[in-house]
Length: 534
Ligand SMILES: [Zn+2]
Image 1: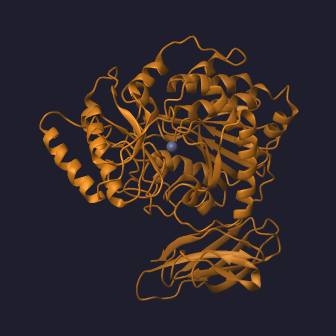
Image 2: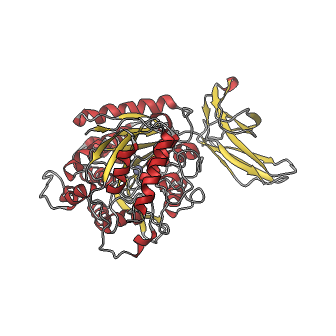
Image 3: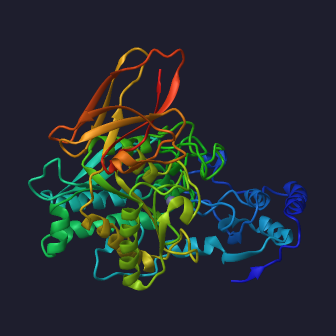
């Protein structure tokens, strides 16, 4: 890899130079082979988009102007989240590469020809992992993934079942493998593990299948695995975005989003907690397009409803690639999340255990401060709305192959993912308090419900009319509230099941008012609910 160019031009002159060079080129040939191009939908199933001569570039972006330049040069950013001040990986056509070289922006070439890697990925190189099922010799198409999930369930119908959790925007089924030991009771802690939210991150699909494979096939022979199955309820969704995943096999290997219309929605900007904030785009042609409303997409709705229907779910890992990262909330703000010490301790153990396998280098921390802001991501919702301990992994590698990870790394990468997931599964995760609020209307009665409180404890209900951008220490309860200038409204006592219900008649306000609500008992807080009195 060579570092090319020196930063000799002012950033605005870079863009001007690039734009003028491009306007000449634009008359000669189309510059982009964009995945967001509606014409692609007209392609026959068998026509795969090609990326001959396309490079993946890594540049260190120091200003808005340089970011603008990259967006001009490329419509395919490879980082899951990105911003000013750090490395930015993007795919670039040969024509645009010439403009990049002329721009003076320093960069490295990470991948010299993307098509060469894609061709190698599909070639039958006779690679085998003899100790494992042949399924893990290669990446697998959607139909084969679903068939394998059924194979596993049929091997152990006493432990596993395939569950249809919802449909995609184009009508495909989204399947989960539910795995748990005998004598299930709804209080058994649940774990939600999923891959393929971003279609092109193929390794994440294999890794999820591999984790399920281990739980099923080693149940009888490994007491450690048997314990993980008997004491947990596993929900494993290898392909959260089946439309997009299939599209990467039939039309466009590097597709990221779902398949809404011709442009697609970035499902991992569509979850409904601080949706629309920094690190998401309102432009349909961006890879981080968040959709037109929180949970506008059936794929994210299905995941949300799974969590709401199974309140025993206490842990969540959303598996992505690439960069070798363990991430936890928040993505939307630089503030550390409640229970940061626990998040940090679990992540640290994941990091050590993963690195111990093959010596790969990983990093961990909150999304916002470890990489970049990202709003509407899955773990912000699972933790922010449901108080599920939510994480995201970015699997191998660190950019040498990016999304087109050679199949020789399929099993090592899957074993790293499995190790990290098992660290979470081993934890006796504290079920955190959850606040649910119904419809609020002026002058009408309303119900506020807290679950998972300590039985018999006094639960305090707070509200703010200012927001949740600042934290407030409340000494009487020894808690830090996540709302600004909190006001204490009332208290209720938790019953023997840890549920505290407050019934209040809403004030007769003259206008609709937006409020932030949070509850707490001594030493513990709930999620923040943003709502309005209608
Ligand atoms: Zn991703």
